[in-house]
Length: 162
Image (tube, rainbow, N blue to C red; front, side, top):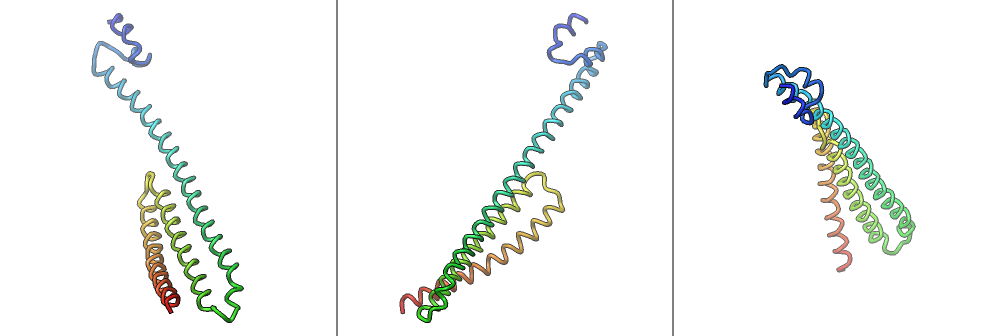
């Protein structure tokens, strides 16, 4: 049997050779235990990489959402002096509200995507519950924001045709 074990040492590690006692069950169990430990370590390592990637992706998407908001606010502030003029006050206000509303809706979509990305890898029941609550609130806000944007677009279109 020593010839058999020495010929197949590339398949099994030295600890498995020691435990080999002319019984296939022992060597099979030892091989399974050795390989399952390695696969568990690899799984934990890869899951850690995925968690880190999801975390950085979440931060990146949240930064994009904040940049959208910042640019929309700066653009709105830049247009505020046009409201002070007597002529076309309503038209300018509608334009500012419409641009800001669309930017807020887009930002909410990005924030929802960031929350989904953070929860995508190995979610717990707690994180799924938080995601459900946050996505429900953001979807609710986005629905009414889109409704208001459509009303503003219709009002702006009505002003242009008059």
